[in-house]
Length: 138
Image (cartoon, rainbow, N blue to C red; front, side, top):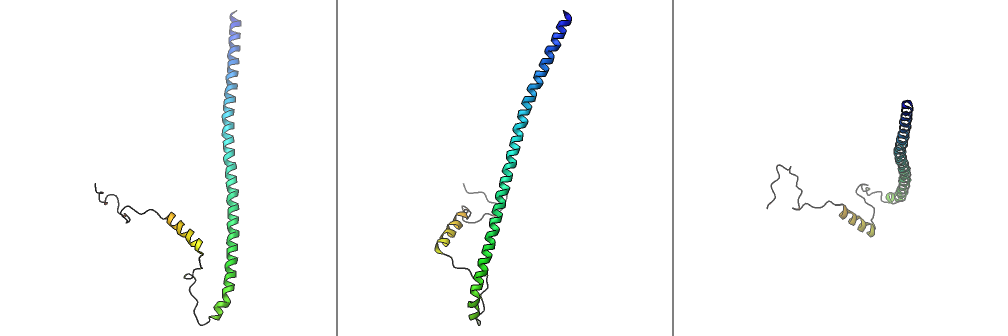
């Protein structure tokens, strides 16, 4: 009887050990799979962002090339006009600005107003360090 109890107890302990190992395996496998899935999603998102960045870079390069071609065409169109005014020195390119359409000027004015930092309360910039700054009136 004593041998049977020992054998039965050993069997129960072995089954409990195997059951615990199986539960631990399932739990850790689930955690590992979840982490792996999140890492794959981050990698996929990074690859997608990299592709979008590449597409935007190519689009910007095409626009720069197009603008360069338009600028060259405009310079070629102005060349005969400069030749007719041979006695007049040409204006410096940095001082000559192209004409701006009124709607573009209005949008630029709105953007400049929106992006300007707010004025300080006294109307001047406070550039003194904190320890030298006078205390505000109470």
